Each structure stands twice: as C-alpha cells, then as structure tokens.
Image (cartoon, rainbow, N blue to C red; front, side):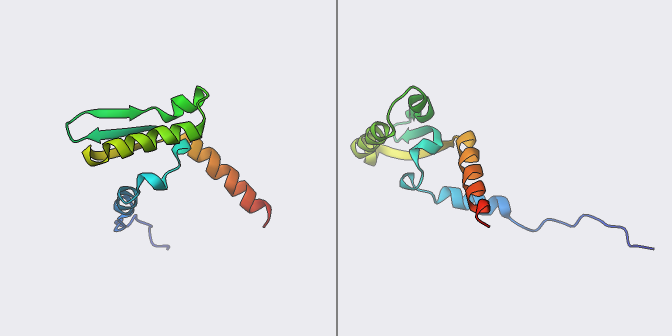
Length: 107
C-alpha cells in the first residue's frame, strides 16, 4: 500500500526575499511608465502624489513626466523621508507576456 502524502512545512522565506528585493529598489531603477502612482513622504509629514498612469493616460509625454519628477526630487531631495512605488500590475503583466512570447517564439 502506498504511503499517504502529507503537506510539508514551508521553510522558504520567499516573501521575505521579495520584500528585501523591493526595499532595495531605487527610484532610478523603476521605469516611470510601470507605475500607477509615485507617492513621496516628506520629512514634515506631508505626502505628495505623482499620478503617473493618470498623466500618461491623459496624453502627457513620458519625457515630460520624467522631467517633472526629476526636478521635484532635486528640489526636495533632503526633505524626502521615503517613496512608495505603486506598480501598474496590468502594465507589468502586458510587458511580461509580450516579452515571454517574443522569447519563446524563437525557441
């Protein structure tokens, strides 16, 4: 008689590895067009929101948005406590799907 299968304890810290990876990402590493929103926390407690996806969907050129964000970070750099990158998951899925199809097509 076959031995009954049982689930085993999960000892992997996959979530922790992802969190470490995400925490190590700098603003310069993320293409702005992959963000829904860039939220910046100021040392004075205020939060500022760059509505990237909304601006792109409204027809703003990516280069102009990039200049706006860069200028704001230069002006407020010392006063920034941190940033939140709200990823556009639909854009990520689309990009990964397209790249995967392109890669697998040539195999």
